[in-house]
Image (cartoon, rainbow, N blue to C red):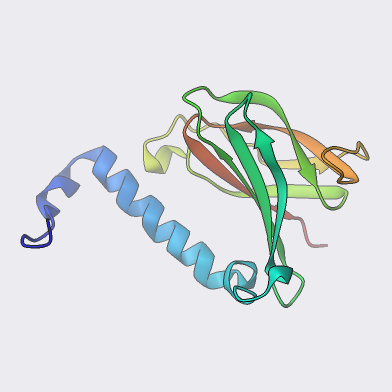
Length: 147
């Protein structure tokens, strides 16, 4: 209700602290990654990777910055975590998870993908793919490793 202030006292509980930390980290990632905002007003800044996976209740997309930065986001709307979930990727080589909403600091189960290699296995019209873990009711943010 807009007539009352936020219940700041609820930050004494770990789950509320976790949400506060997640929002802060998402805002920091957004601010530091041109892929999220530099091409907001052009179709060049967004590409669907998978928008039709109703069996897993997931979607994935890529944000592209005006500097060429690419970030892949995989979102799971299901209450079940998906192990060995295949995600389409635009390029091969090493990829890394830069954020997961399942991190322990957000009161998640702390399952991470770390760094992994994209295989030359076409998936959803993309030349590469990888198998990752996607947390239940969560999201992972992936980025190619810069050498």
